[in-house]
Image (tube, rainbow, N blue to C red; front, side, top):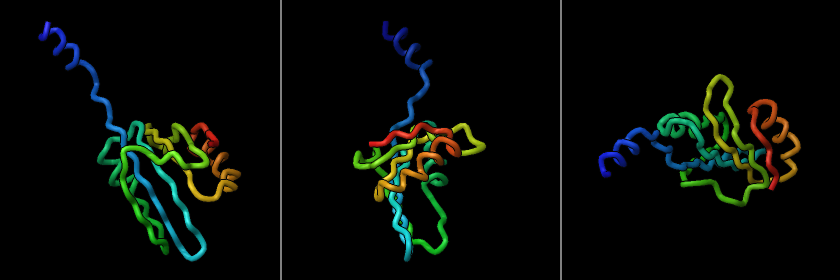
Length: 117
């Protein structure tokens, strides 16, 4: 019985561990906070590429967490980066009126589903 169970488990794909990065960027005129929750991105690529924004003239802080905080005003679920098969959920925090331009970007640019909270 143990051999059969071990063989079955060996055939299952390993599930990616939930991981999120919280990005806070600031400049003289802008203060943005968002959280990217990994769905299908390889962990190393998620940490070194997707969670490493290069924003000229802005102070950027990145921290990692098991999942995004629940206090967002909107989420772009299943967001895809152009030219890649990878998906993530992007949670937005701060000024809720920003949803007016984030929702169309989510649906058109990222091919995701916008969910207001």
